[in-house]
Amino acid sequence: MVEAGYVAGIDVGTTKICTLIAQTAANGQLDILGVGLHPSRGLRSGVVVDHAQAVKSVQQSVTEAEQMAQLPIARAYVGVTGAHIKSRNVTGRVRVASGDEITSEDVEQAIQSACDNVALPHDREIIHTLVRDFTIDGQRGVKRPLGMHAARLDANIHVVSAAAGALRNVAAAVEETGVQVQKQVLESVATSLAVLAEDESDLGVVLMDIGGGTTDLAIFANGAIAHSGAILVAGNHITSDIAKLLRISYKQAEEVKKKFGTAFADMTNGDDPVLVSEIGTHEQVRVPRGLIADIIQARLVEIFQLTIKNLEQAGMYDTVTSGVVLTGGGSQLPGTLEMASEIMGNTPVRIGSARGVGRMANRVASPIFATGVGLVLYAANEGADARPPATPYYLELVEKARSWWRKYAQPRISAYLPGN
Image (cartoon, rainbow, N blue to C red; front, side):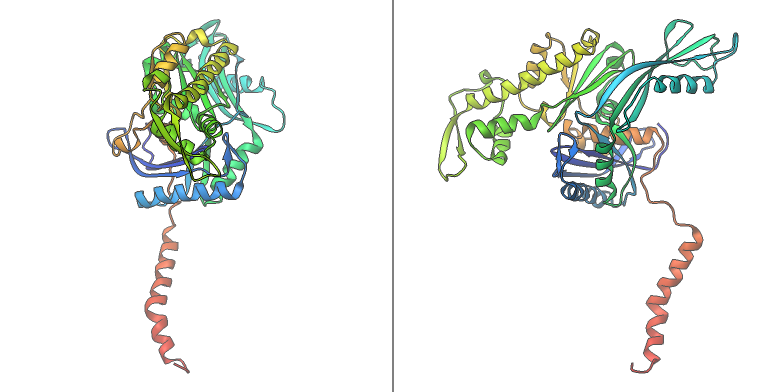
């Protein structure tokens, strides 16, 4: 990890805005200095639908993190998600002079050749070109080709693109708060840095981030990303189902889900009553707890079945040999691990908690912080710095002179002017 001073990440989600400010510690870990967590308004499924509300939500999250860290931030890495995200694996090729060593220029040309093979409409942008591996003279699986001898170099790349308008709208909401967007990062890519072990990435693992508006998916195999995508069913859909079927407010449905919800009806006494207030009345009615579990179970089953379908369509389902890692707020309901394992062929499933964090590790241990931690890890790895640019020394002197004038000289002179 590069020594990077202070870094910041903003997870712009459908249900929450999470801002983290961190500093690289001497032991190579990140010390979290500030955390800002605020309910998200103005976004739906990762897309801005109300600019003013989105700006306000981001501002409140950033301010909270700055106050905790006692440090202003000028730049940040920002997470992006949504159904507009698309990905594909492509290969680019470059000819290497016979017997010559592969140079960094060869590598760059091979990667660019791969990107050139992606035909994008004018309304889409590439946000990631992630190297999976290289092939030299037909031999695949090469991780570092520099200095090797070959006649032909292929770069095998995972390309992620997004709707240009959606990217600009998220960036505009952040930058209106005074924070410059240094880079927009696919949230599943960021989250993987925080929660995946190296062995899992080598053997083959699927990362599922069950958020509010989307469930982000990513498969890692042979130490690199092999597939990424998103499905538009997540935690908010569970809450909406509870609200509609019980005829209660969305806010109360969210409280009922968190307090009484389970993934399986048989995890609780299904006849135990839960008191709720129907919309339009002040009367409380009794709802069997088993009914709440049935509603939740139906949606969770759909999420995991859609995940399987997504991975099968990408031809990647059989590559998952080390299991599934769940993150996000939707992963926290009791029984979710067991359900995921059962539906996905009894594969091992675990909850992904943030790694690589020193100070305040307990504060960001919940899966809801995984993407935020991943963003600051990503920023630190790239040597980013979130601090405002340093003021030139001569400008500091000018400002000090102005301050002295306003504080000391101007009041004394004013006292001798006519009328004083």
